[in-house]
Length: 281
Length: 299
Image (cartoon, rainbow over all chains, first blue to last red; front, side):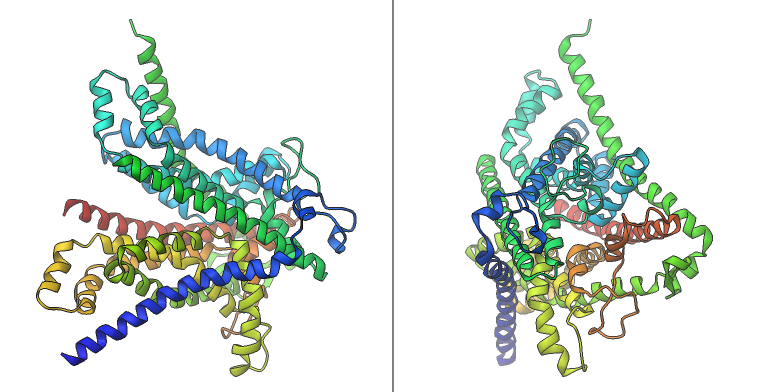
């Protein structure tokens, strides 16, 4: 009996230790980024374009990258929303429950979700060469769109599956068409959709491998779709590769900007999904 | 006469069907276009030579992918070796020991870890893991190491795949019927005995599937690994050597090689390779996990 109790205690301690280490690593990562980045973070950093000699450590900011990232994510979000919402409605309410076809689609989404972003980047670039598009805002939007589409479809599908069937059944029995029913249900699913969007935005805005060849890089804010666009992850990556200490410090500061964006997105996604579970009951 | 409502319904239905077919075709299109882009280099050299030669001289038309393939597996393997015990133990703890409060607390922790962008992991890796290896760990084993090593890549990658593994394992554990663990506990087994004899045994296929899925995620991870693994195109002999995984190869060279069709094709070949491996691993583990989920729904 003694040995069993002893084993129980030892393993409990090990398990708590493992969980604590994971928590510790998260704090360590965020701590490292803030500790290194905050001293170089200034108002100029996030409001000014890179000035002359910016990459030698002179003044300027990364607003080009911030705005570029936001443009790309908004564009790709619109594309993937147009595709995701109808698809999720289709596999949940138009097809029979657990039909072969909906299972195949879900499986395809799982596979698409697993494809590495660098493969999307390479494919996106090959596609752009084929269509004769240069590295541009448009190219970035398309490629990031490919990346976040399966993320959004899957997470929106997950919340939609949890919806009680009474509501659709009630709507249908009142004589609504399935299309009309979807519009009503969508309102009910709104918090879930918002958290799926935020999740996808978080993933898309932080990904560097997709925009590496497709969006290009520039010191200006793009004003049309066929101009290149800078992105925040690439700004961090390029500045970090500089031998100048000042520029490296700005890479850390840019990392703080990106981390803060991700933290905000993640917490608001959590807020909306908790709202959804309240709606459910 | 058809009313406007049914017309709308029909249009919506067709539009949705179109998207559904597009989603499935999209997968094929990616695979096929990568394949055709990779075809020139596969025609020139046999697949065997491409996969087993370590001779990488793109400007002389020698494309041996062995160093990159070995690097990819090496880094991913180390990541899994580190990540598996942590995620397994944390998963068990959150599932069978932790109070509701603790579980609530850990959900955002796992979410945040999975939400942190690869570049941030890379920054963290270069700031903390790389110096740690080059100053503290490596000197105990080898004479010199820059810190940009297989080990650094493995550690950073491990942290990146832990959230994925933890959340899948929690799902797998949740699929075990409550009656089973209750029965074990009511027979006087301790919690740990129940975990060992019931939960782990029952969820072994799920744990394997989660591991394979995480492995496929690790294969494709680009930016973070690229930033810490040194990028030297030689076969790494120890965990303190620099390495050069396939995604990093694509990321570092693609876009500049348009003037050399062979080189481009070779890089596309590595993207195709990555695509095939990832689909294979991913597909197998998803099928296993879906079956587990189905069993859960039935019981």
